[in-house]
Image (tube, rainbow, N blue to C red; front, side, top):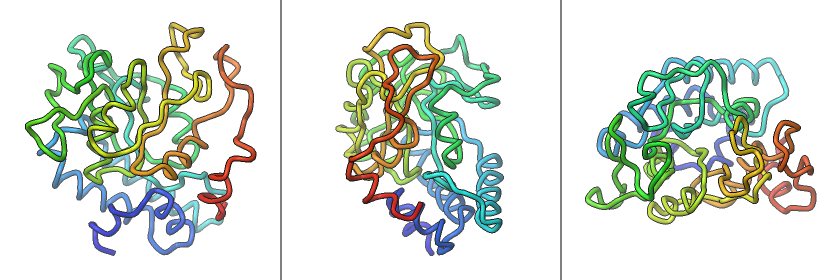
Length: 262
């Protein structure tokens, strides 16, 4: 399947095709890495790439399928994490020169849940310094540009994620929102950013465990893909006092409509 066709598939379609062995996780990953090489220099959405790690992860994902192992709901999907989110062994700058060489030794909870659900980390997405601002610019990596008009802003602070999605460089991405940081860039880039209810996606670690203001949530190119990702990252965590106790979304239609193959 040509690169352009693979990258235009929805996340839901990709997971279904991987599970049915119609396309390999390696093919999915290689197609997105090719798209990144072609497009990212023009928009600067992905700021730290891990191609070797991503390809190793996709090969392991294919092995799990060959071995008949139980698959996560995001099995084989490339994902990029906002550069505010600590990622084990991967540079995490928070968009600040203070942390320009910072490499955490742990994953934050949302990254942990995405990887546990089978998503494969491909890199980090750009953000303003410490996520402060309705644009996406910092002195470490520079500015992320709007994919429809590079003379315009892409919004922020999850601007790198929104642009990477719009440009078909990744099928899903994580983001965070205090005053519009999921919704603003999604609107500017014609994708979906869902601000979750406080506690629906527990934030850990956090220095403000009782605050309902800042949340984390899914980003994708359509609502069904956002719902699929939300099912992977939502659920209680005993370390987060405001986390919502329900562990699933019983009765919600997307449980049936986007995951019948699990």
